[in-house]
Length: 290
Image (cartoon, rainbow, N blue to C red):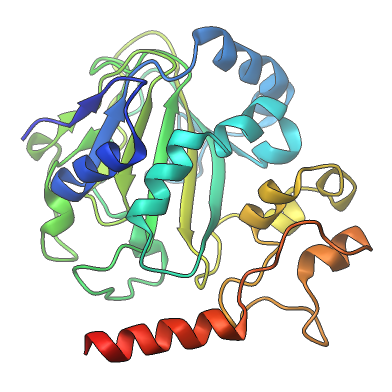
């Protein structure tokens, strides 16, 4: 099946429907090329200082630069893009809240072979999540055009419904080709992998992933973003980074204090998640459905 494609005017509900059907979707030309050029300028010193991967999976000709919230104001806007958050809110709507899982520029250099086809949710120690339970929703923003020749991400549409731990080949995939400024969505269950870069240029994308708030984040946001920078950020972004209780009893500080208030040293303007009333309501709702 082809990858579902949408215009920049698409709603989060429409994109989420595409993800439910095929496990992946593309919104084309969501932001201008100039926006991504701004991100590239902000990140250039860090990109230049990043070493290539040390194994075949990470890519020996691929550079992966993280810590984007602390390093790029433009990337903060991408993390909080309304259509993205609306889409993720539907895909991960079965939990109390979701959080930022990782931020990373992936720059695939010329001559890099194709990556092994995999599921991103295998990062959780290969835990066998139920077939109908999504633990994460991923995005890749195209900083450069994504083409089959330069290593566009390879996807197996519909494979979010496949059995777990399968070994699939690149021949079973299709390239997620898209112009710069577009964003690719895919769930943690979708089988995929970076494509082989047979061009003479580097293919660059910004990987921003969201996950349910009760799992450990792949990128430690509390250390990736220095506290002195975190204290200058808007509260909704800080909550998304993890400065909030993910459910009734997860993530509080010492005497049940709101983590955001501990960071800021004052009472937060936004409400903390995880009230006892919310937890009781969810239990009652589950009980009625069973």
